[in-house]
Length: 436
Image 1 (cartoon, rainbow, N blue to C red):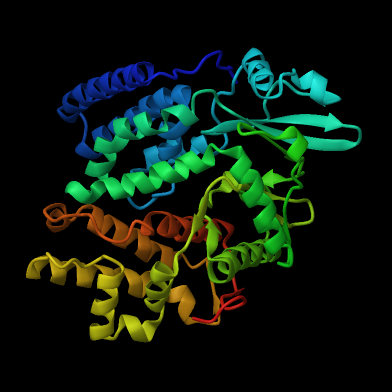
Image 2: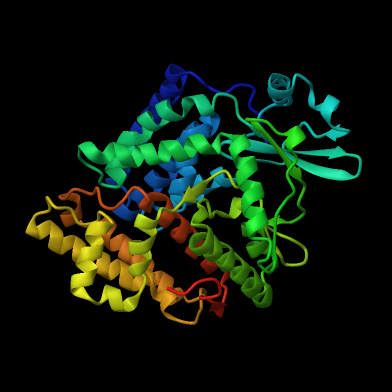
């Protein structure tokens, strides 16, 4: 894969890159309108989506950082984005052009005052994988094999300006309106800022690994403080396949069930006992060992769950509460889904929408075990997503619904459900670590 010798770091450089990308998208639309006259609307739209997804991703992957991270987040929205965007943006999880070796050395000199060869017995200057915020290199000290994660230059400093650039797109996509929309973007900005702080990730990694070490079939790396800094994080090298690679190459039902149970228990224990959760559940953050154990390798994005959100959120995971109209409405106000300034039309619409959504999404919590290979269940989720993404009625209303905490908690559950479905895990014990 071709390496990158420099990354646009200033606000002007990054804005210019986005403008260039926007120009390419504009040309694609011109082609689309012409193609509609010759080919079918469906074929022309598919070609448009493919072209736009490629051009947008190609622009973002050279910028890296927050803009690319947002694309990665959007790749998990399988029921909102067209398939072409999901497939292209998902590459941001662990397959983007890496930094060139000279730029890697420059980063080490900045934070350690030494070249990698002065710190490690061996250091591979070519990265083994590269994602939105950083890339990983192999190193050795004695008999210890290490994974060294290096953050891209300028990523931390460009978060605010990057989000300002993508904000208009996100607001249109998710129908966000009104003066209070900034609180949602502030939540994303704060989390992205945390993800660029590798000192914080070091602390979070050790904390969660220690708290969850009792969970069966779950493993974590060991972290090395002396070879870590604000922008470089060193851990033990963990042998295994990325979860998506494992699913495509080595899938078998017995191991899928074992991995699925470990994954489910890992998330439920964090949520219900630690009130803090790994909020980035995409395949690039998990490996599968040769013994069929799940390895968690990234703790940059952690979300703390306050009680005033946790309690009403999980009260609405109980079927009897969803089906109790008075309790249901009262709890929707607590979660900021319903607002005091809602019209009768808005109140009725959002009550019906969330009743339909929660009745479906919470089904796994209503049984002792659940079959995450059930295509019918996930088909209904896809249908519901498509239904409301095309709703003209919803587009006419204020889309600012729910506490800011929904952003990362819902992202966690959607990501978890998608991973469980990809694994086709069956007979998963739901209540291992909590009782609703």
